[in-house]
Length: 101
Image (cartoon, rainbow, N blue to C red; front, top):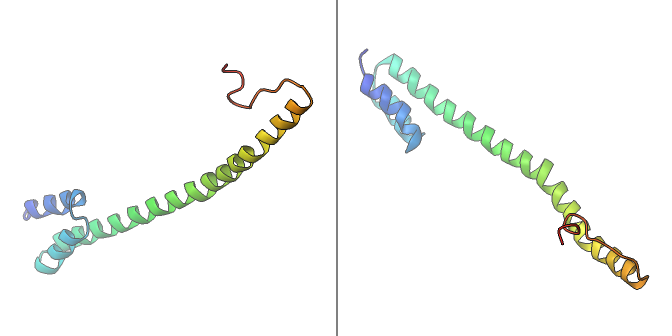
């Protein structure tokens, strides 16, 4: 259990300096087990960062853009339908909110 404090520092650095502290410890310390743990910590942070970026992009592209297009079209088309209905003296309720009032 040598270098327990360094191992704890490597793991705890994820909350304040996830790349810098493990990298410095890797360069300074000669213990192979601590070096291995430092490299694992750096790789874990890189992989998690990449996964978070990819997940965010997928949410924006797959869910966000189609919803934005759909709601944008709805924002343009629904008032036009309501105008036509009003011109023809027909009753019209807006989608989603029409039954609230």
